[in-house]
Length: 453
Ligand code: UDP
Image (tube, rainbow, N blue to C red; front, side, top):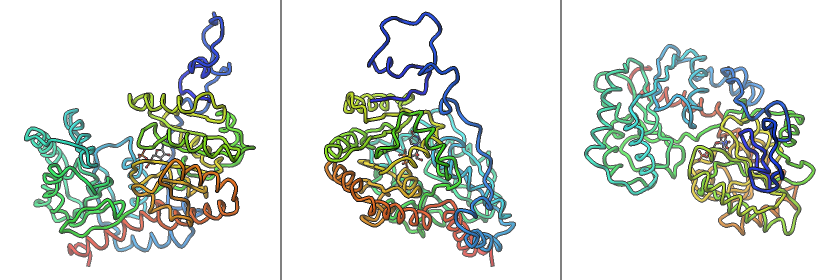
């Protein structure tokens, strides 16, 4: 078993495998005695802002022309997007790309972030978990804190735009400002609301009902509401570091750095070290499959160093892997988009054996790279994997092992699944598709409100 470390530590000594007999007297050198850090050990410079033309090569001229056409009547109409954080997390990542692109279409779009103290963000983290179905007792004090920060944000922000889009529950009560403006208001819910804590949902629901529309990421994530609901799948950006095309030399370089042998089949799962991603189940499935077919397993994850539970899960995974040299466990820092891209592209088969899942963007990423993908039938994964058409859905360790073995021994079917998966993502889960949905929604809601003729 190999473990890549983000820090300047020799992996073998850290893992207790073969520490040198006598301690070196000179300052410790980097792993394998390099003088310079490996590329993935330091954050890269931020990527430049995307422009619509950059997508033309990926989705074609017609799709970009369609976006420009849809935006024509919206020119000069103003949009405000509000969420709870400017960095970190999928929503911020998506807004970072979406907002400049809509602006480029001459639809002035402003992105605002709510502020709050630690007490507010601790509370909204607890709300987040409770909305996913966790046990929670909503106290009067919690409601007061939530509304107090909402009041502060309402005072601080102005709502002079034509269209206001509020993302997720943290800023949802800002709808109380709607009485003072003519805008159309939409609530974009990125989380799975299918089984919320009833008391908390009872508190939030009256706010949501005041919006003109609610948008969910999957039909299985929605609630019964008296307002129109729209389905917007999450999306990936095909020209980002995580998903852009890579030349073979880059893929090879990353594999060399991580000790991945490209001459043998590679099975990969990319995921945080979290029990709900079932990395131990992946190790078990891999070991079962490998009895019949030669392969290596790459488990690439992150976040273990700053998440106490992640550290425990990583330890469990290492224990399950034992000293198996064909299991490569990579605990990567958060900026390793390019490395993840390369590992996904180097893979023969990609696995996502989650026990619970949101939409499962790692699956989208793998399908985009035309990888035969085996994933658990949970959360938004069945929206992406149509069994035996765009990938394989599984329900157990044994099922996962069977499909690994099957796909590794049926390369023609595997290739066809990957090809179909790529087309499915191109049609439904790309940034440009997402933009098209936003532009259509703005047109519908602004027309309803009489802001557009
Ligand atoms: N990811 C990453 N580094 C890691 C593990 C995951 O950059 O070590 C990325 C992964 O490529 C994907 C996202 O984090 O873009 C995970 O999204 P997903 O919806 O699959 O799961 P979540 O972690 O949000 O539950």
